[in-house]
Amino acid sequence: MNDMRLTERDVNTKEIKIEARQVQVFYGTTHALKDVDVEIEDKTVTAFIGPSGCGKSTFLRCLNRMNDTIDVCRVQGDILLDGEDIYDKRVDPVQLRAKVGMVFQKPNPFPKSIYDNVAYGPKIHGLARTKVELDEVVESSLRRAALWNEVKDRLDAPGTGLSGGQQQRLCIARAVATSPEVLLMDEPCSALDPIATAQVEELIDELRQSYSVVIVTHSMQQAARVSQKTAFFHLGNLVEFGETSKIFTNPEDPRTESYITGRIG
Ligand SMILES: Nc1ncnc2c1ncn2[C@@H]1O[C@H](COP(=O)(O)OP(=O)(O)OP(=O)(O)O)[C@@H](O)[C@H]1O
Ligand SMILES: [Mg+2]
Image (tube, rainbow, N blue to C red):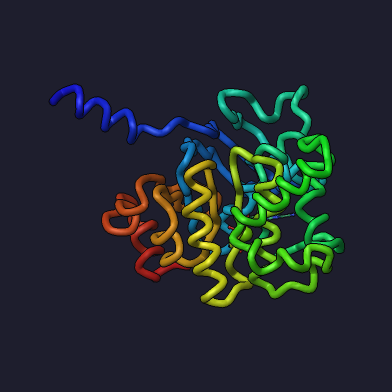
């Protein structure tokens, strides 16, 4: 009996994929994030919620060094991926971003064919040696993104010719094509209708089997539907982090409670 319980607990204990310690972010003199400490689990969907301007996108961009591309932005503190400092000088940000993929708010397919949108990453990272292998990666990525059946007969058509929801799923296919370990999604459904949103949410739930997924969302219903862990940010502080069910039903901090009940936002 005891053994059984131990096994169950082991199964429920997820590995820590990303650990942030005392993260500070400045844009020039604006102190956008203050002392953020958080542990992001593997094979879990973590939602970042909080009012506009509280630092959700800023923190998401810390996790794959997208902030490096913003001149005035300075990041301090430690961010570890599998225990390794991602800001170490030896880390190549391009390789890092293949491991920690990102999907943006607005679908942004390359001005290329559907096929090439997905094949691009595996090509530049040398993940496919032959055309057959590349075809396989493209097909499996489009399948994972629940888009294959809709596009398999027009892989040479431009990615920009798809509907908004299809374009977003194409961007997800592009992100999963490099076999990332973490997928960062910044309001991935805000440009989508309810049907496409439901498809993407279903997909997020599936991706959780293989990846650690972090999603920024303004929709509390969405956070409650798709995530197991939730982080609430307010004015640059990570106010509360925990089980999604707990954050939404029994938050500890009055600021979290005000936000989820719609009093601040
Ligand atoms: N490129 C930038 N240059 C200067 N300041 C920035 C930049 N990006 C963000 N900021 C500032 O950092 C703070 C946090 O912004 P961030 O975009 O992370 O918020 P957010 O929580 O994602 O908001 P939203 O929900 O509106 O997307 C804000 O005060 C914002 O003005
Ligand atoms: Mg944002």
